[in-house]
Length: 377
Length: 174
Image (cartoon, rainbow over the protein chains, first blue to last red):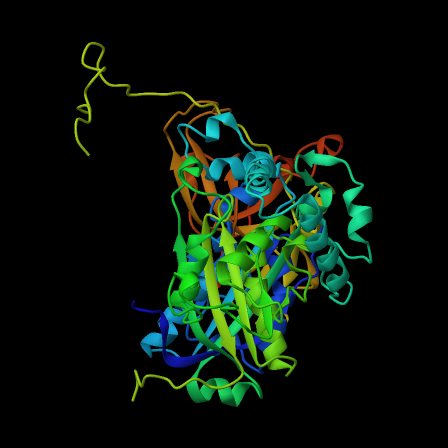
C-alpha cells in the first residue's frame, strides 16, 4: 500500500494556543488570533514575511459570517501578497495541506492556524447543517444525539460500559489540571461522574465536550531549516487522513476503519488487519486523540491498537477543551510540544471531523530526524 | 447488482421531484470585538474613532483591531475629523426593494482627515452631477437623541464649501 510518508523531513517547530473559554465575548476572531500568531512566530524568531506559505482552518458556519477566514487574515497581515490557502475544516487539515506543499520542496516554512468560536450560536443546529441536506439535516439531529447513538451501539456491542466513559472523562480532567489552556479540569472520580444525570443516554454530561472558543497556531519547517529554528523539532514521520460515508446507517459506528487506514498511511501500522499481528500494534510515548465524546476515545484506541504503555491525552484532550476547527490542530501541537521539550521521543496525534468520527487524520511524530527522500537532493 | 429498478421507476406518472423545502434558521450572537466596540461607541457619541498601526503608522477607520498590512495589533486610538475628501463615488440611478433615499443619490468613499482608509457614505445637499473626486465634505449626524452604535447615526456627508483637495492628497487611497 502506498503510504503518505514524507519526501522531505518536515517538523513542527513551534506551537501556540489561546486560553480555551466558554465564550470569548470581548474579542473578535482577529483579536483572538493576533497574540497566538505573534507567539507562534516569536517562539522561533520568525516574521510572517519569512513564511513560505500560510494555511488556515475554520468554518464560517460557526460565527455565521461569510468569508470570516478572509477577515481573519488581518491577524497575519497579507501584504506584500502572500501564498495562502484555507480549508473549511479543522486546522489539522490545513496542516496537512501545508505539509504537502513542504514535501514538494518549493518552500521551507509554513504557518498554520485555526480559530473557532463555538459559542455564537446553537451548536445543535449549526452542526446539524453538516449532515446530508435532504434526509438528515431537516430532522435536526444534534451532535449529542448522534454521539449517543454511537455510544449506545458501543455499549450494546459489549465493548464498553458507561463506567468506561466515566473513566475516560475523569482521567482527562485530572490530566487537564496541569494544562493552563484547558477549560474543564478537576480531580473528580469516575464514581462521582457516574452519579450525574443523563444528557442523552448512555451519555452523561462528563462524556460530552465543553463548548469552547479558542485559537491555535503551528509553524512547520523542512530539513535543515527546522533544525536551525528549533533545538528539538517534532519531526513528522507520516501523515494521512481518510473519510467514511456520510450515511450514518451504512457505518458500523463502534469501529473506526478510517482511523486505522490513516494510521497505515502515516506509517504507524503495517496493514489494516491488526489480527495478523499480536498486539499492541502502536506503541508511542504519547498519543493525543481528538475524541470529543468520551466513548470515541475507546473506539480510537481500538482502531489504532494502542499500547497500554502509551500516555493518552496528557493535555486533557477534547473533553477538556473543544474549540471547533481548532481542537484537532491542538492535538498535533500538544503532541509536538512533548517532543520539543524532550518529554517524549515518539508521539501520535489524531484529529477528527464530521459526526461520529466520520473523518480522521493521523500524524506520526518523532524526535529523531527521519531521512528525507531527497525531493530536493 | 441485478434487477435494480430504473431510476425513473415510480416517477414516470408524475415526473421527478424537482424541489423539496427544508426550512433552516440559525441565530447568531455577533461579537464586534474590542476595536470595533470602541468605534461603535464613538459613533453613538457622534465622533469617528480610528486606530493607528504602531509599525506603519496608518490610521484605520473603522478599526478591526489589527493592521491588515503588518499583522500587528492596533492599540493607539485616534479621534478623526468630521471632515474628509471624496476619493471616488458613484451615482445610483437604479431603484431596488426597500430603497429609502430618492434617486439619484451618491454613494462615495470619504477619506476622513487623518485617516488612511476611506469610509463609505452617502453624499447629499449637492446635485448628483456636481459631485467630484476631491470634493471636501463633512458628516451630518442624526439628532443627538437618535445617536446609536450603528452607521445609521451618520445621515450623510455634505459639501463644506472648501476648495477641492488636490489629487495628490488622496491618490494613494483610491
